[in-house]
Amino acid sequence: MKKLLLLTAVAGLFAFSSVNAQVIKSPKLSVGADFGFPIGDASEGTDFAFGGSLQYQHPVAENLLLTGSAGYLNFKGKDFDFGGVTVKGGNVGVIPVKAGARYYFGENFFVNGELGAGFSTEKGGSTAFIYAPGAGVEFEVSDKSSVELGARYEGHSVSGGTASFIGLRAAFNFGI
Image 1 (cartoon, rainbow, N blue to C red):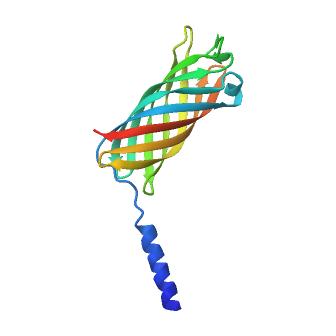
Image 2 (cartoon, rainbow, N blue to C red):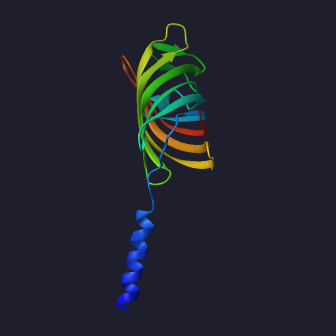
Image 3 (cartoon, rainbow, N blue to C red):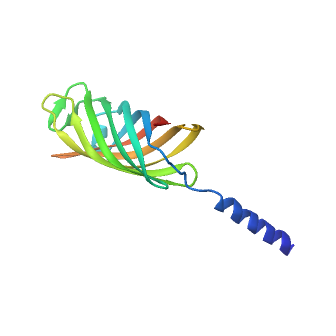
């Protein structure tokens, strides 16, 4: 019985120790679809957001990448105030430009954080400071490509307040 218990413990230790962080050796480019679900004060002005993004990922350590991203988000819904501009009908376009880092732990899981600016596409709109911590999972589909699913909290701070949302991103990554 003791031998069986010892063998089980060694097998369990081997199984958990074989889960390594993902090793990224070359840069990646990611194309994704983004969805946002406003929370807090932002939920009073809009129901949801959708758009797309492009992200560059550059490895700097075994499981750490620096990221740079840009995209477009369209906030739909009710009357919405963004940077002092009230838009009737609730359509507000934002071009987020962010930089940050992504850290892989385990086989496919990552945490990330980005900071940047959100440029309003509305006449008279202002630029917002963006902060976005998040997490996700990535599944390899070939040697140089993968599919990614991620979630984040994103805040857009402008004079007068912060518009926040829970963001979801589905993306296709390919090595370059």
